[in-house]
Image (tube, rainbow, N blue to C red; front, side):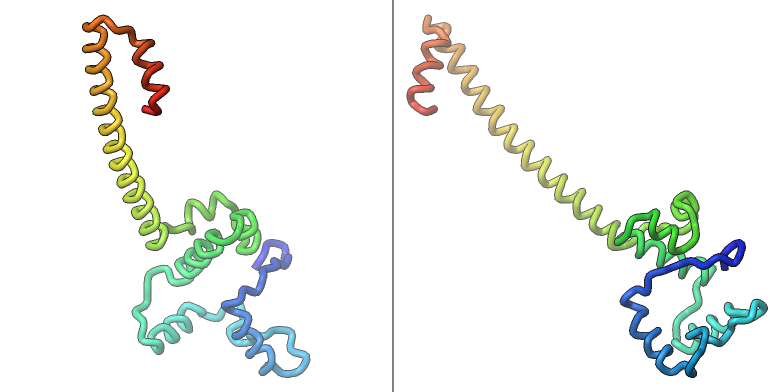
Amino acid sequence: HHAGGDCRYVPIFPELREHLLKVYEEAPEGSEYVITRYRCRNCNLRTQLLRIIKRAGVKPWPRMFHNLRSTRQTELTAEWPMQDVCAWLGNTQDVAMNHYLQITDDNFTRAAKAAHNAAQSVAASDRQHETEKSANDENAEECLSLAIAGESWQSVQRSREGSNL
């Protein structure tokens, strides 16, 4: 359905291709549509979908068509630029972001794992800084004791450079 009766071109995704080809091969010669059932405007697709869902032994979910569309918009947006997906599905990026795109369990898990890895990295970095700080504290103490003994920092620095310390 498109305002003004225009067409919308949508790629045939690999997940659907095999099924659509099968139905196409079974369609009568010269058929205009591959799927001919429930094409009338007053058909109740929700009732038919509920029957299919119950026959499959799955518990129906709320807002079935909206949630199917939402899931597919989320899946496609993970792989393709949002402006392309919106053109295929016939909505705007604002509508997609406000009504269709979802947080996925996979993304949540990946983000949590990334945060965990980052926290480990920060902890390791903190330990490294503590070690460096400890070494710097020792250097400061050594410099202080050398200064008290009357040696200059420059002579200590040159001797360290020569010894690869």
